[in-house]
Amino acid sequence: MAITYEDRFGRAGGPNPALIKEYSTLLTTCKGSPGDNTVLLTDASSVPGGSEKSYYLIWGVTAVTDSTTAFFGMLYDTNVTHADDTVDAATYIGFGANVQGPFFWNTEHPLKVNDGSGVKIDVVSSLGNFNTTITYSLIHP
Image (cartoon, rainbow, N blue to C red):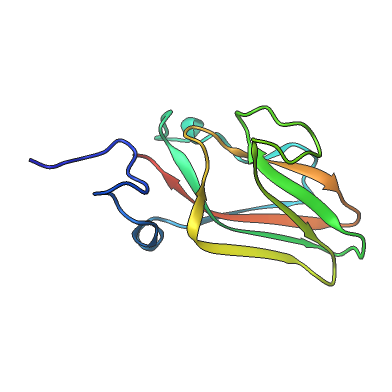
């Protein structure tokens, strides 16, 4: 008799992050100069084949700008109340970048977005042109 778990990520008997990264499809989304509170990843529950248990794993974030003035932002959960320009319970990651110092973050242990949720960007400050890129996997348990 096989043993299975609903939440396979990080549980005994389930695939570890290295196996998920190696055998799942890594996808990338890039938004050029997104407005404040723009959806970067639509709710996982609403994508084709998605359910309320579908979720994203974020493997990396890149933020770049052509301005010498800093571009600050935060990525946050679409289904948790978030106060603008504030690090709170909905915030997954905050970042800052300027033309001399782009922001690059990659990990072997991904950030797990809440089941069924997506990701929005809170643009705290920006001048010039900027891009935000997320590398992720979409998991349908």
